[in-house]
Length: 198
Image (cartoon, rainbow, N blue to C red; front, side, top):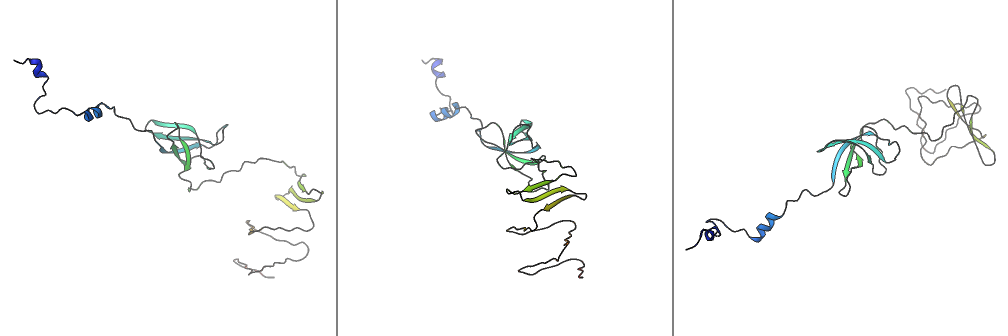
């Protein structure tokens, strides 16, 4: 006659004993998501770090909320305040890197150039460029109607390998002595609403 303990060791009808492979799979803990490369879009709030170069302040939002941090910038990127920037979080770092400007084709104000050297001139002062042998070449003086640029040699040539464009609201060419000669190896075109010939 068998005891109740012997009956308890027997599997119930309709059940199947798990294989070693199934037991191994069930005992393996579930792994979290692998760290990887992530990209985000943020907005630049300040393009000039107080002490470091190559850093901009960026505001962005992710699953953990809103962030505002100074981030490193990819080399040779021109980023301005209020630009939307593309952020990349490399797999082996814990912080984003700014790798591009999303709205770079949007119309933006021209960046203001920062003067490296400034010379203040009084009305009777000028800046002069002199050659090594003492010949005066160029003078810049503050005139009554604006700055004056003078070439101090008796004769001068203005040469450049490409095109020369002279742009202003109005242009006046005045010869105080002698005539005005225009020479070209191609056609000479004169365009205007009215062309006056003396």
